[in-house]
Amino acid sequence: MTRRLALVGLGPGDPDLLTAQAARVLNEVDHLLVADKTAQHPGTADLIAMREEICRRHVRGPWHLVAVPDPERDRDDPTDYAGAVRDWHEARAIAFEATLLEHPGDAAILVWGDPSLYDSAIRLADRIEERGVVDVEVEVVPGLSSVQLLAARHRLVLNAVGGPITITTGRRLLEDATAGDNLVVMLDGSLTCRRLPERAAWNVWWGANLGSADEVVVAGRLDRVVEEIAARRAEARAARGWVMDTYLLRRA
Ligand SMILES: C[S@@+](CC[C@H](N)C(=O)[O-])C[C@H]1O[C@@H](n2cnc3c(N)ncnc32)[C@H](O)[C@@H]1O
Image (cartoon, rainbow, N blue to C red; front, top):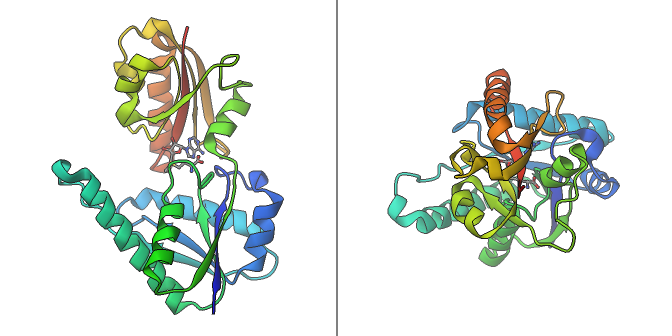
């Protein structure tokens, strides 16, 4: 029998930011699945607790949350990054497939933010479908992304009038900043904007742990505020054991 597999965007942390559609789907399915990275990153137990809080607020009656242990990713082979990612995606598909076999009925995978942005849930579901071991009908339920919340907190229009916007990662920032002058940076574990040449030529709008009780935002000319951002970032990480931050960089 075909089972429903919904990929539900939860928004970036604040239970108030869950959409009505997402809340409806969470109430309709039998199991709520969440990737569990606590073995690799113990601090992320907090992120599972935040998802539970969202369920507490929005799911009527009891719910069944299943934490699916995330397989280890082989980061030791820089010569075959793509291969390491491919193997990891396959291992994740097998882990979720095993969970679905163990728990019959409809399921939702709880996705941080929106599934369309730097998230592997859609590829994961595609792979589960392709493997054909579990018969699933996949649907995507959009959520508010951290990028939208960053823009709201700073009262920003992300693009300049009629202009483009690049969404990139810390890993690619130095290269992408040579071509773009309006960039959103995500997945930046080391505040790469500190290494940009001509820091006085950029403005930054930064936000960490947006949507949580201890969210922090800073904006200004990059050379003037970057050390404050580094300090606030370090404080946020020390307080929770993890920090997630996103920023817009725009050439002044
Ligand atoms: C794996 S990506 C997931 C993005 C997510 N799908 C979204 O729509 O926001 C994780 C990155 O998203 C950003 N992020 C997620 N939640 C955030 C939050 N609450 N505050 C600031 N940035 C956040 C950070 O750049 C983090 O490194």
